[in-house]
Amino acid sequence: MQLLVIFDDVNNFLKWAWSKMTAPLAIIIYIVIILAIILLLIISVMMKESRFSKAMKRMRKRPKGAAAAGETAKKEATASRFSMLNELDDRYYGKPPAESFDTATLAGFCEEFRNFAANKLGLYYDISDIRRFIAGLAVSRILILQGMSGTGKTSLAYAFGEFLENPSTIIPVQPMWKERTDLLGYYNEFTKRFNETLLLQKMYEANYNKNIYITILDEMNIARVEYYFAEFLSLLEIPDPEARLLEVVSDKWETDPKLLKEGRIKLPENMWFIGTANNDDSTFAISDKVYDRAMVLNLDRKSEPFHVASSRTVRLSAKDFTDLAAAAMSAYTVSAETLEKLETLDEYLIKTFHLTFGNRIMKQIKAYIPVYVVCGGRELEALDDIVAKKVFRKLETQNTVYVRSMAEEVCAFLDGLFGEEEMTACKEYIRRLANNA
Image (tube, rainbow, N blue to C red):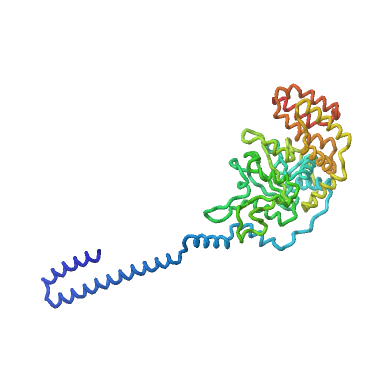
């Protein structure tokens, strides 16, 4: 259309020029311009045909319907959606795990760890707290460190990783966490890649190794633990470690990491979860479901600094540590006298508060006391610690007025059963409840 307009303008110009010049010259100019216009028209048509031809070729190459879906699936099957986990395969697959580990005793292990924390990191802990920490790890794969801010909860878990020459993984819990994808990551449909979290990478790496892996859930109760950690809690109850499988993705690609089985990852037997908890207005109360499955260590006061001339790290495999704990449980049996007193206390608490120990807590008590004793502690000291955290803690859900009225009677009962110098943690706990009621 634009060329026709130009042609009209040129034609008008030529009519004007015809009247001003000789006839032969005007005819020559007219013919040249007509030929130029025809050439431009030919070039324009050829360009349009070329673009049309290319478009048709692209249309013929583009698969339709099921063919398109099949091609997309083929591309996905040959792509890698787990870049970090695939790198771990390249690093570890087909290579035997390290075997050079130290030998140790539980008592010596506690002393070495305490000295290392003081000498290398400037962190000072009472030896009884170190024994509780190690005994707690021997009983459960979940340990909760709670107490006032600044008492060294996160530092203790961090120092343990440094002591073992396998740095702890710190996972800062976020307030909006509600499910396992917040811990493991998720598949991004847009990028066709899996957003691999640090925890997922460490879990995958741990399945290739024999080391002890420590995962710190920092400020674990800033979100509801029983929400985002629910599947971990359930899987850790399964006796067979090989059956503890977490779903990462719901399908399977040929290029998925080698240790993913049908989109699921094994919860590593050599990984421990240590949560730090603060009790203030910004946090949630930890539910009984979590407390019953975890061991608890209260850090309510700072320890006095002490001098250590030298210290060393200790490389201990997860199997060696669990073997030491099992050997302690076999070598030391809770005395019949203590078990009898424990039964009497259970009967008293059922009658007075309708509280009972329960099978899980009794199993933990019978495992915790031997390990604590072999670590260098006393039997009643261990009993006092675990009963205060596992049993007397449940009084928080009781009628506060009734608890206050019964506090001194309960303390007197403990004095008469165990002696006035024993069960100090239990008596301190119930008196604090009464004062805060």
